[in-house]
Length: 367
Image (cartoon, rainbow, N blue to C red; front, top):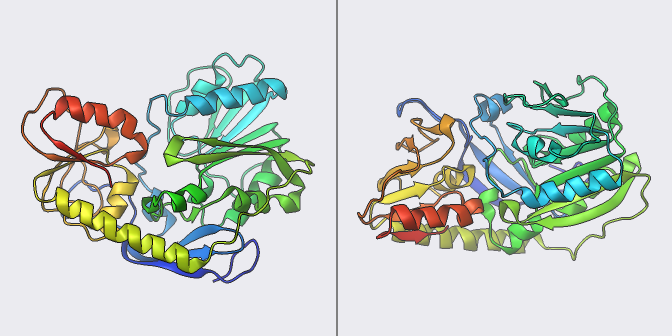
């Protein structure tokens, strides 16, 4: 298999026997989970990962259970884009993959010059003002043309089978002045050994350089490049029409180094889980990462007693490959001893204080 952008041959850095669709929950234990073998492939020239598996889009995104959490983890990005919109007289915005409009509603507030904010996603949400509109679809070649000033695509590039086709559709269907693309940063995923990011729903793990290259043919150049803490380290890339600034590629990383780092992380994660499994386990945060890791690394599920999550639509359902249903976050203190695994590590600053309060006698594990 070759890279869509440069044509170079991908190198295999990880083979997984059991990759699941992490946001396809089951109503009963006996229901089968959607699963497939998976290969994580690396392009040395463009510096990104592509995950190759046989899961269908309907397997992954049918009855999709992820909802953007209502917290302040995105407030830094909201302030950044508000400033950009004001400085560049942005009047129309299209957000692609805006989920339940949590981010859109924050961005629109007190941004008086915006005339229209159009959100494309199949996750329903409650309309709250006169400029926010919803298109119940994913972007494709069939999407009707809609000129806009600014495209916002936050953490959606990774969710497409073809980043090249997705980039082409953005250009042809919206012809935007500016494009804001936010992704979990592959450079930091690699540096921080955060390979739980490589679950099936993420067809890609991207670097700023790899995304920048996608739009070069359409005469977009670098406007701004920023870094944010969200999702364990993400980049925010603003591209502008006819901008001449570029992004230089980092020093080439050999695929064998990537493979060795993944194997090292694999071994360390199994060791931590084995220690946690010496007692009954509570998982706080039914994230796609933790569910993927349990399945891909074949971690024992025998000691999992509770899985807490604040997302209402996940509660009382069974995560893929796990026979413990999701329950709401506790409302009273429990002095019993558990080993509590932070399942949503991206939100550990929010979750860990809750664990310390509701399970004061328990030990906390990060994997």
